[in-house]
Figure 1 (tube, rainbow, N blue to C red):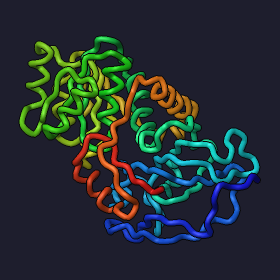
Figure 2 (cartoon, rainbow, N blue to C red; figure 1 turned 90 degrees about the vertical axis):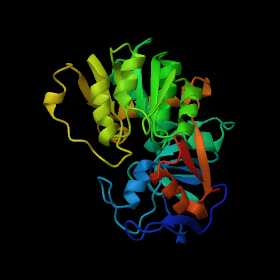
Figure 3 (cartoon, rainbow, N blue to C red; figure 1 turned 180 degrees about the vertical axis):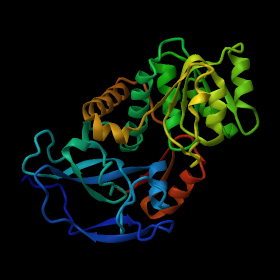
Figure 4 (tube, helix red, strand yellow; figure 1 turned 135 degrees about the vertical axis):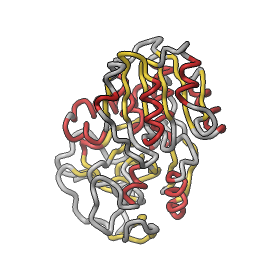
Length: 336
């Protein structure tokens, strides 16, 4: 086992001791010995995603054992490697997705080699922590939907950066004609900056009527919905014949009930995409999609949007910020 850059006997972490309660910043003892394929990471930045808020409120589909350290999308550097780790060395700069173990809202965490990707030393830690979860999800979704240049696309945008990543990829990589739908005026300006040719503030305007106006009553070919709830019902009305609706998440925390008969009048397709499930059941696609996203970022095709940054000590404010859907982009914790 190789040495480390700087190991401490204890590290600082945001700990959930009771569901739907505040996280506490505590000192935890460092694990003394790594498993063969484990890597110890000095965490610099950790994203606060919608999934993190659901976990903390006890509403996630998997209930963790308490006490629990949330956070799964992060950037940092390698401190120590297990004896069978082949592709990483001490000092490497990395992006991680700890979708099984979480634990990244801390100054240090452990990851499996399969959950890490190496990045160049000049990549900013904040952009690195905001990049791969949303963009890899959308990249898989776009391919599942057979998105093509010139296609008309509707993207619903809330918090956490998923919808914004969909606007960015669909507009700038796939060259689609994107309509962005969000719930505040300040978010509409961000959507236009990311490439949307038209925006809808659905707190003031009807999504269906606005889409029909923009598409000469044809509807859109592809819809990426990351909001759910009543917004999904509007999406279902707005799809064109033989179009495709891709469900990316439910940031509204309202999962709509869908009758199959609702899909028949327009012969439309309904697809669900979860990066977490790809990690478990189609790992090769998961790994390659994340690497593609990193390569696209390095080639300046895409740019994640960091909306807000909080210190680790202000983690509860960060959680609340995402819960209240105050920003369209990523919320990041600075834990360095």
